[in-house]
Image (cartoon, rainbow, N blue to C red; front, top):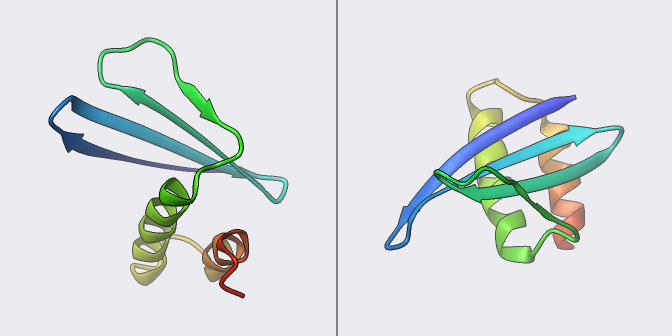
Length: 80
């Protein structure tokens, strides 16, 4: 299983994201900083898939994850 985390800051505060890839399936969770519960996104919205792809692409560029993760997200986005 692989975990990928990132955060974004906006006017409401800091939103934290956690994505896991296990058994050929992506799962995405998010929460506002300070909250106790994580929100599970199923299905994953397109805008969050695009953010996840950017995070994974950047990790791939640095040699931190395999290219198959990028191609898996591209298939989910319909960019075959």
